[in-house]
Length: 206
Image 1 (cartoon, rainbow, N blue to C red):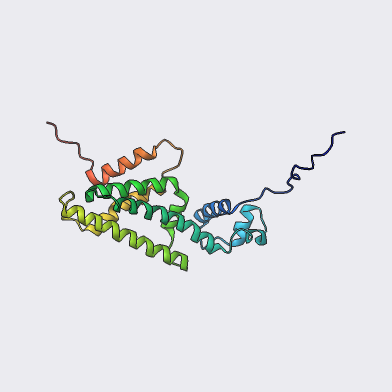
Image 2 (image 1 turned 60 degrees about the vertical axis):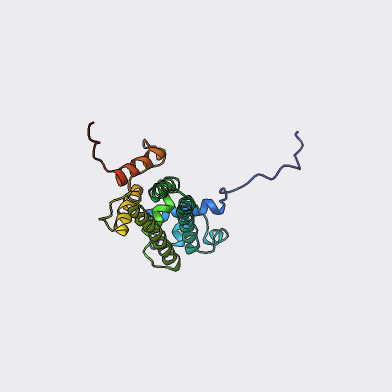
């Protein structure tokens, strides 16, 4: 008869546990499926196979989960913007850097960015996120305006409108882009920049 190994941990029983990151990831998926407001703590606990008390062991509240996901998406977008602003490049190159970074953030954090784009300001976390999005847009608009002054972009389009149109294209990727699919994320950033800044016209023949 084998002697039990007293140094090995006892076998785990019952349902596998979750860490906080897994709870947030599954919650974001559920929020995107049902809508944040329509998803209850009971819904989330049921999806995880936990009791509500066990869920609260990982997170303080439903809004805390939302805040964590929004912070992740916004922090990554703000990081891409900060990288662009830290360069001494021409404004048009800083704009390309920001757009490329935004596409990268979206493809790497698709569920969190999708959730960010759906917030409507119904809670403190959502209102804070909307304010950060407005600040992001304003700083990108300033880059667009600088590029117009430098002659790299047409100046007969309002800079704020141009920013909304470019990022409207970026944000629309949440509707159809799927990680691991046929579309390469790096090529996708190139394509967005081509359409947004260079247009689809074929170059004139020499």
